[in-house]
Image (tube, rainbow, N blue to C red; front, side, top):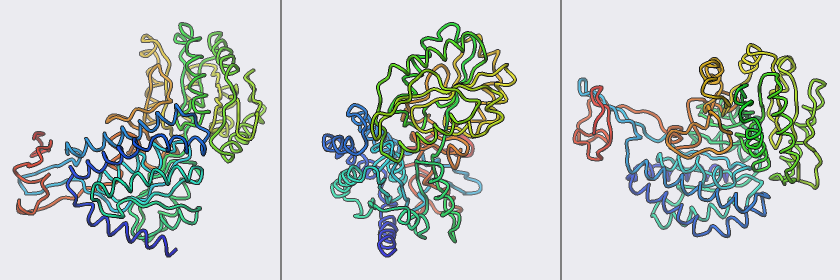
Length: 475
């Protein structure tokens, strides 16, 4: 495509300038983007509400999250230690992280602000020193355009190269053209397993393969231990009813698999959870495509003879509205039918009753990679059920104790990632300041005179950052 070639050539030209812009100026640019978004909040929220069916309170909160992560990346690069400078004086070899080049970011349907045009992928790439081409999600094109206009204003205000960030609309052909273009050095994606795998295939077929950092599929298993259910089962039912239905279940961290031991307490929890879900009002999903996929996925699961439906209603009221549903099955059934482990994206969860501890551990071990996994337990149970946490360590990037998985904090310690198919590379996160590491690579300078080194590696440490010098950390 001629247009895509021109865009990627512009991205490469801008990168040659942008990568050398001092960190303080890059930080000011990120802050300017945040300020422009805040100034345009009313129009952004109104347009996003019209395109996504998301409520105003949720969208306003997402605006805050978007500007917050821009500020956190600005703070990160101003401080500077993120480059992981390492110096060995004998021999004279010095290493740091440098940006990879132009990056392509695919907007997400379920987060029109925080995971889209000016979201975490874009913010982290710009912080690293990479230029960005955004592929707008077709579910909210006007919102994406308005966000891009905020970025454009910040580019002018901050005197950044004109094509530091570019905006593209189109279908899957456009997306493929962006991924396979020789100037593209990395891809960020949040979406379906099918979409992520397609992008990975395009990237692998290139003459020079590139990484695709895709967040794709997760059922976020939750283990309910006996004492926790006996002491606070009713409260847990309310907590997880709210988590399952949050945002019409359209969160990648939605708790879709609830696992426990067969017992009166677990049966009571199921009934209480079903009753809490039954009280909820119908919610509109993001767009007809997601609504159709949800209904089809739920129908496939409920077609299995080993799955029954709890009393929670499943009536659909209009083209995009749904009520939540709760399905029940056994540990033996989910072990025999791998399809029951698949994600149903929306307000739905599958309760799995296991006959004993051994079966519960076998169910956990048979799951694919996840973004999160949680355990509800008393302090006493944690020692008795240590094997559960040991298995969970192999499953996911984030393990939660006594809390629901929905809600992801933007902070330095956050890991929003996990083994495939949760993501394509479990070593990285798409949320939090560590997300910057996706868009950099290490380079070492050997026998360079001090004057030719980046400031981060010079003897005098002019930036005053933390460095590892001859195996000792210091400034």
